[in-house]
Structure formats: structure tokens, C-alpha cells
Length: 260
Length: 242
Image (cartoon, chains in turn yellow, brown):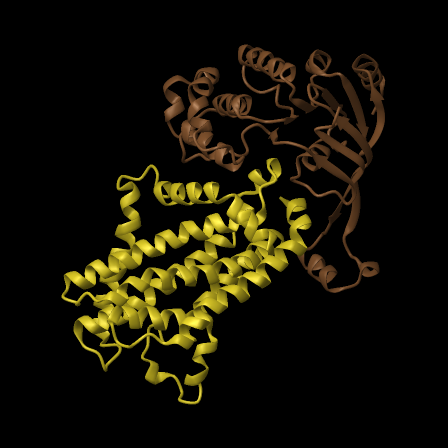
């Protein structure tokens, strides 16, 4: 809990740095801050065209198919990018760690928040595109930012773990890249759920990101009523990942500072 | 008078691994089977720094000065002994390590203030002073990534000189920048010390040590070789042979 208390105590720094990171990530480029919107917009168009041509999934048509795929892929790509970025939190801030006693958890929180803001922006662009193409607005859409935020809260816990390992093992980044690619294909994000063997389908809920992606999809498409058990898991996974991550950081804190 | 920063028998042991895998194996095995090589960077240091007191730390490269300062500032955890701090610590080591290249000088000052959890508006209230002191003129509002090394030193020192702190930890912080700026910075430091700020200063500049310090500690291979009056410490240090 000390780690979370530290994050709260440094909330001003976390917020300011996360916003700065989103604002200045593309500093020096001609389009500047607009790349934060252009990138997800391009992905939305690209996925729409590619999966439309391939007619995946076959049971959906046109706009529904496009939205279905984007609502799965964009949040997943945001989650994967968050893990990649957050895993470098201690390495990138080694200079800061040498001169200040800023808690390690604060650095992970700042990186996670910056990525989460980017992911919220991407989902926002997707929704604007969806509404512009004729999808009806409905009140449940207001829960989308919460679902994306919870997915990143889960990423925060994993980030604590990954950033600690990355401080000692450079291979962590490469392994993570492979794992996230494989991880994506364990869930029906870019292929229909019908392709998952029937015996395995009930177990999909144990794959944490899938719980979030499924609900994000459902909310975006307005397909189902809220599933309380899924939302319980969406709140539960971050608690588990943060508990493990905070414990690991606590155990390795001294060694991480030694190698900073 | 209560010490602002104190250390009691403080020591730091680093464990050096030739392969990352050895560290992983160490994590999984009990202490006697440890594979890394243990090296004591600092051992058995006891010190007290009161308000308005300046402690100098001198020694050859690798003597343990930076490790000691990092422990005093809390950015390194001691292996043995304990360090205590009472008040806000500002640490200037390597001068510009904590600056962000994409942000302007002004924005870096704001980030530094939020990192130190200074009250909202504190940076704004002191911004004109920091701007003026840095002598960066219009560059203050340009990205730090476009600064020369000397300009980065100016920004770091100016920020450091006007952010509210009880304890200053300076590691070779008076040797950067041009001669005129270094003189201004030394004068500012003297006014902070007169105002009750406690300072621990590691330096290779015997002039700076002689000018500012009340007491000097000589570190040799991590251990205290001498602790006492600056004149005597400098005489012993310069008279020693590698």
C-alpha cells in the first residue's frame, strides 16, 4: 500500500509528466500533437479496409464488422504499447533515480497514465468515426472510458513487474514483444469467436485482457446488457496485478536503485 | 541543534554480476550460494549536518563520494547503518541528469517543482528569479534539447538555487558552467547557507571546499580516512599518494 500512497502523494508530478509526454511525444515534427490522433485514425481506416476485404468475421457485415474489429484491436494495441513503454520506466528514468528519491511506483504510474491518455484518445477517435458512419449513440458508451482505464490499471500492475525485471534483464523487452504478439492470438480479437474450440471458450474469461476487450466491444456495439461478473473481474484483475507488482517492487527496490 | 541529515555507521555494498543470469540464479538460491561479487563502496561513515553547516567530502575517483551522497539523499538504500533526513532534500549530481529535452527551460522548472511536491504556484512565483539567474534569456522558453552543455548546467543550477530546500547535496556541482556563472552560483549558495540550509558537498575543487566547508571528510576506498577541519583535510589529501 505504501507504493500506492506514494503515487497519490506525487499525483501532481504524475499528471503533469503524463500530459507532457502526450503533448511532446512528437515534439519537433510538423504535425506535432496531432499525431496522437492521426495514428489511431489511420489504424481505424486500415483495419476497416483490410478486414472488410477479407470479410472477417463473416457473420458481420460492413460497418458492424469494421467497428467490431477496431473495438478489439485498438484497445489491445494500446494495452500492448503500454506494457512496452512501462517496462522501460526505470531504465528511461535512470538519471532521475540517481538524483532524487522519487518512489519507483511513481515512474510506472506516470508512464502508464501517459499511455492510458493515448489509448483514451484512440478510442475517442474510433467512436467519433463510428458515430459519423451512422452508429447510434447510447448511454452505455459512457462506460467505455472506464473500461479502457481499468485495462490500463491492470497494465500498471504488470508494468511494475516488467519495469523491475527490465532494470536487470535487457532481454525483457524482446521477450515482451514476442509474448504480446502471441498473447493477442490467444483471444478472438482479429478472428471470430466461433473459431475458438467450444471446449476452450468458457476459459477465455481467465485471459485477463479478453474480459476488458469483450466488454469494450459490447459497449461500443451496444450489443448486450452489462455483465456484472465481467465487471467484477475487470475490477479484480488490477487488484491482483497491482498486489503482485507492488510486492515485487518492494522486494527489488534496493537492487533497482543500485543499478540505476 | 537537530541535524538536518545524519548518517550512523552507514555502508553500501554493491553486488556485481558478470552475467544477468547469475543474478536470476541468486534470487532463487539462499544467501551462501550467491554468485555475484560483493564490493563495499562505502563503509562505516558517521556524520551530522546541522542548519547552516557545510560538510565537504573529498577523495579520488571511485572513493565512494557519489554513493555516500546518494544514500544521504535517499536515492540509494544503505546495506548497513542508517541515514536520516529532516526536511526537503535537493540533490544536484552530474548537474543536468534530470532535465527533459523535449520541454522548455520553464517547463523543466515546473516539473522539478512538482517532483519536489512544492506547493502549487511555487515555481510560478520564483520563475522570474530563476529565469534571470540562469541568464538564458529567450532560450529559457526553448526546448532544453537545443541547449549546449553549459546552458543545461545554468538551467539546472538556477532551478536548484531557487527551489525551497532544507538540505542541498552537491556532487561536483560547482565546477560546471563558465567562471562568471560559477561565481554567481557560489554567492547564491553562501546566501542559502546563511539562511540555514545544510549542505553536503563532494568536490575535486579544493578552492570550493576551502571557501564553503566547515568540516571535511576524506573518503578512501569507501572508508573515512579523516574527518575534521578543512585546512587539515586538504593538506592531508593533497599530501597523500595513490
